[in-house]
Length: 304
Image 1 (cartoon, rainbow, N blue to C red):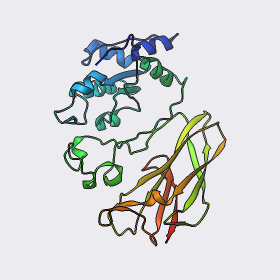
Image 2: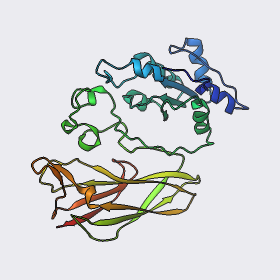
Image 3: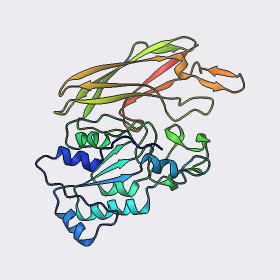
Image 4: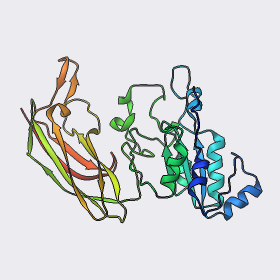
């Protein structure tokens, strides 16, 4: 672990950005009664929790995996205590991987997640909190509410037992592909360049209109998923097969197109020892803002 030459903390960033605002900092994971009174009287409370890059390395078990998803009990309780006295609590969670923060999610109106992303982290967080930057990031993994939501051991790599968005049948805390911003978007007009796809070397273009229905310019990450309802073998519940991040002005509509190739429908056939595409089986197309926020659906035929 090597420390950077300097580091802007979240507190530093907020203090620099809040020019005409009084910032009252409480540097403790167990606020006193007097500190909680000050927090309750504030216009808003910002609680920073999570892990440093050094913490993340030290928090692993011998095999290199984490032993649990949750934050420390002290950090979780800190958020709950602050939220109990100030309903306008924002949580900034710094972590390079998903955390099991179900109780926190239930208790606060806003959570901003940022990875350990460098010495300017504090300024970047302040830009988002004060609206100078409209975030558009989406999760690249499934977030579970807690460790007990995992259908098998945290160190078990067999995802077919119910892990990841491919096979998880429960309700995730944040699904794969989830992300919010200061903008809102509507999807419409799903089109296919052809009703079927040749199993050996076909290509179909999938198009969709995305409209920014807010008053703020923002980025949307449009995602294309496939599912295989009539497959003769075990296939994932969903598979991401395309995405586009687009910047859309208020009230404007962007036409988003993604190409789907026959190889995108393939699976590894263990008996044949090669990738195979199931011809004659329909494929469901799903377009949306996350794996659980599907806005439009279609069906594609696969021909030999």
